[in-house]
Image (cartoon, rainbow, N blue to C red):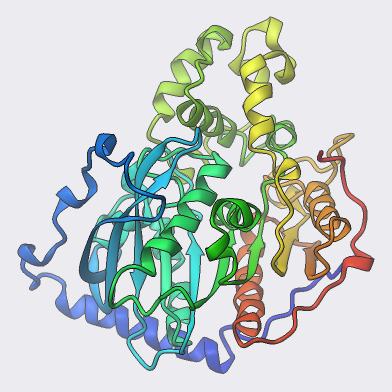
Length: 443
């Protein structure tokens, strides 16, 4: 287990300096253009309104519509071309659904035959907070996450890589529905290869990258690719992720009553209820019946550190104090447990912090142990070991012991980008399968 990440492209590196210059140019251009760009140049809102009733006849990844527009940061256009694609995908219940992805084109020289699918950690129950809306010029508290990820996107663009930004949660914002995240990510790659000008085709080497909510999409895409999109699986050179959600049922127990992350439990209940058409109403307390409607369109920015001490027992009737006593909850958390999903066949970089006390989550609960404040480190170690035991010998697990979920993000994301850069270059993937410490039971 490694305590510090291996970073080759941080802010002081050549790649980091290129990214900073590109980001500075993008921001400066936006400032100059602010106030003098005609409203007609803004992307039309009707691109985000679509009737899914007619798409059953389309195959997954089929292109339904596309358009070209400037990439926007905090609502301001910058000198990066964005191609947005509406495509047919699949929702959490296996039904046809449309989704949107964005392909950002490098403003400088392009790296031949390579691209990265960057899965955002926008974590929201509101479709308006999705990356596609932010790219098109939307501005909201929830979309501030997309702006915060700008440095990492700029770094990928500075390396000459086209960047895919799928709306991983779909157009209903099905928060926490991991399999749907995976379908949307894989079909985004399929669709991008079918649109002229993206720099992506069926032979392009693709890397998957994500942190936190983006890791949900990254890992599920890697796990589902061989069965759901085998031709995309053949293009994938690796998946790099950090802050990984493995067993949602254990995560709920971990954040229960915490200072910073307790409110995310309410978001998850709403998200999986929406994705799987579950009615939790008969099990909810009077307090939850008042609280949850207030979170129907919440983003992570609306709940983080806003509900300190919130517990499961406050949300349910007394007879359902054990979460597993709620049948639909027990069933749906099994369906979104990565420990029960197929093992990815591609190289994996998995980073995980383990000092959640910094963000107000107790790390000493029996059967759970330490985590990063929202993700359980023992679960992530177990997942990495499981992948190794199942035959994936190219697993590189890094634990950021002194750090928490938020504080580890810059280090983990930089390590992910550097690791993925080597995979795109065709270099052999490192592995520490023989030295990953034991974790929790996850199957």
